[in-house]
Structure formats: C-alpha cells, structure tokens
Length: 304
Image (tube, rainbow, N blue to C red; front, side, top):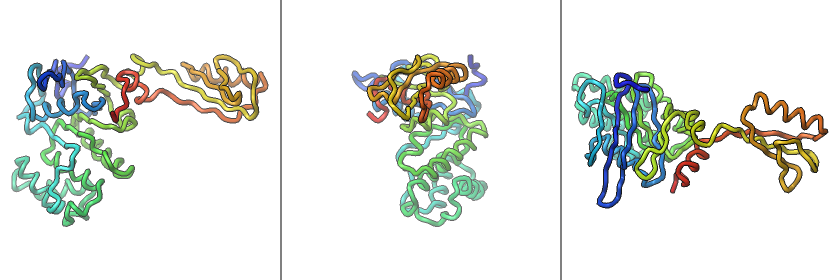
C-alpha cells in the first residue's frame, strides 16, 4: 500500500458530468515520482476529462485532486497536449523563449535553460529553423521541451508519439526516461498498446468514467486473463493424432494449445511429440498482450 509520502499526486472519487453524461464516475488514481502511469481507454471513456481536471482546466463536480509535493500546484504540473501547441511562424529558439516566459522563468536563467532544452530534445542544430519547416517528430520533441521548461514534478503527456516514425518515438521515450530518472511523475495517454505494455510502470484502464483495472502489466494479467502462453506448432507432414494438450487444426498440419508453465510443460510436450515420431517443422510461443487484456475488460478496440 502506498503512503502519502510516496505519492506525488492522488485522485480520489473524481466525478464530472456534462448534463446527463457522466464523464467521470468516481475515478481514483495515484501518480508516483519516477514512474509512468499509462491511462488507456476507448474514446469517450473519460481520459480527456480527467486530464483537463488534472491540468486545472475543468473543476470536478465532486471528489478530490491532491498534490503531495511542496510548492504551488501550477508550478509543479506540466502539460503536453496531443495537438502541437507551438507557434509555427516562430523558430525553435523563439518558441522556447515564449514558453519560458509563460512558465515564469527568471530572465537571467532563460538562455541557459533554452540551450539545455534544445540539446535535450536534439534540436540544437535547428535553433533558427521555423517550426513550420520541422518534421512531425521534431515538432513533437519541441512540444515536450516547451511543456517541461519549468522542470515540473508532475507531467501529463497526451498521445506524445501520435503520427511519428519509430526513430522519433524512441527519442521521445529517451526524453521521458531522463525525466523519470529525475523523479518526475508521468501520466501518459496513448493508443499504442505496445508502448504502454513496454514503457509504463502502472496501467490504468478507464471505461465509462471508471477505472476498471489498475496495476502493473503482470498484476493485471494475473487478475484478468491469466498468464498462459499459446503454443503453435506446424508439422512437415499431415498428422492424424497429436499428444495432449495439443489440438489439431482442420488442415492436420498445425496444432495449438495453452500452457501455464513453459519450463515444465514445454519440454514434456516436445518429448511427447518426439516419442510419437511427429516431424516438427516449427514452433512458436505467444504470450497474452495488453491488447488481449484491454478487449477483455472493455470489449472495445482502443481506436473506437
């Protein structure tokens, strides 16, 4: 159980309605220093409403948002929206100057902070380039740099890698990792389920305004669909029988099954096939993914 001292930001029983529509129906969530919480849900599930409340742009009808860190909340929070929030007719450096003033940085430190930010985002050679001339990945990196110039302790990242190439996506997560190493608490929304599975310390799945599950990927698997691995084998010639728990496909050249303990069950399965004289062509293992779990919990594709 987390203590208040180990929590950067807590949300308790957050509720928000738009007329008869309940956008948030009792959301509770914790953000911890140095960790990413991935907030996943179908469109209309309440992600945007929660982010707006956390950013101070909407007020809850009831419930509580509490920051457990010293200082003014507005100085502790950083927001990077999904939409590129940059001045397209200004240069990279000019955009950073504008956002530095917006965040209230002291004039004496602005030049140093901007230089460090451009280096951090790997944009130092683009300092005099107009934002409109930058690639999508560069604009995304600058978008993040502008959102964290004031070194926030809590960062809200809304779809930071949408529409970027794999190289830019990797660089963005290098930037995020450096923030985590400094102790920043990050709330991330993404439609890339593999990103959430690989990058997030905790995953919160929201649906119909409620957090339906929250925990690490492994914890969520244990509580929902289980950790069984699916074994798929292909034979070099048709077979009439296969050892259990394998089940033949209609083509009789493939079979599959689920196993819980790979270390114990897979060697036994291979030994049974060898003893039965079954000519194995190839074998593949596939574990449960976040997509499987997401569909199990919400019954919807994330893109809906």
